[in-house]
Image 1 (cartoon, helix red, strand yellow):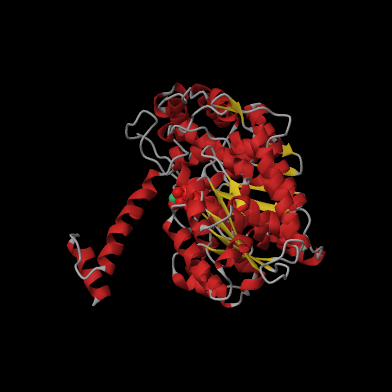
Image 2 (cartoon, rainbow, N blue to C red):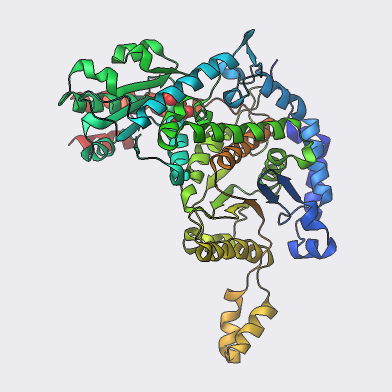
Length: 545
Ligand code: F6P
């Protein structure tokens, strides 16, 4: 069964939310806190090692209840059940959306076209285990009899961003293998990576769901050529493995069938790190840690599937995005992890969120009458405070921001961690409270600033505050907690897509650029340039000339 096709803006709750928004808009968060001493408690959720405080958002009990009404009106509950059951909710590609099956328990049964897919998932999980253990232990060796020291993941988009983000995030848990990533078709990327590598001790993992992606195939061929400068064709089987659904193309590339890790069309690229796409993760942190990552995600799946909406993290966070995006007109959201290990987290979520929900046709094929996908950006704190926080504090745009922090640091440097977290808490407080004219005035007077200078400088030092933030405080950055955190955002994407009445699991928009690049490549290779607009034409002439 397909997802319902309800235009959210025609629902009763949407209309009520509009009226409610007009009343709430002028209210300051400080007032809302004063009015309700229970506010912090009322707008917080505990889940495992997570404590999520969303009380610093511009909402009241009424907002929440109207947003929950909206979730009911668009049939979110039914949609969640369709998602987990493996119904073909990716209607435009006629597929199920089952990344959740990749972290299911072995005792679970999930059916696709009448077949339980959990046993196949576990077959691949076992294969990942056996393979990664053999490489890490050094039992499997390269063509010259030496153990592997380096792994290169060749992939792009979902076949790169997830593995990069997770291997960076869990670097603390890594073993002796050095993992590298080649994604860009920019030859400088691949050649720079190969520069320091020894073909005798390097394993190459080609990851491409389709095995037709230009960037990945070009990089794989360049690497194979480099490899064959030292090794022979028969050695390819020892050094190259592939993860894909396209077994025919893998065979053509010369990879032996035992080195192939299958994946399935019911896993979208941007949700695939839980599959063999995450092989480089298992190689980097070991199979046990990889399994814990999956377990954490599974726990979030259960939470999402079974918890009442008022206590359900992905639902609440998804609804908050709708509130800001569709009523406040906020176009972007910032995601700021206070952990250097999570420095690729926002980049990873950019694909997850923007490729999924950057759609302008509704599920009936009509143009949407409301805003959809938010623009996602961010960098770790505290660095980001010294870069772009000025705009969040005093700019003209409303930017709802997620703050993600950990109670414990991994290296255990308590002094550093206290300073880091002091900034973490201070920022959300400052964004909410701001600084009034009176406060600035008395501060300046205390500093002995004279009345004339005081009047001149005063307006620039006033902070309006009232900037919404959500705080995700997690015990520790463990594989399990990271798994749960990623799954939380995955389900938040789902919630938003259902409410916006769009298809979140296709990505037709990226195809046009790919097609045109093929035509232009021919123009660059041939002496004649084909027909283009005059701007593209002059650029091509300049490039070739
Ligand atoms: O850019 C579009 C896209 O299809 C992404 O969705 C995907 O993650 C990426 O390209 C890579 O695709 P593949 O794994 O098939 O090489």
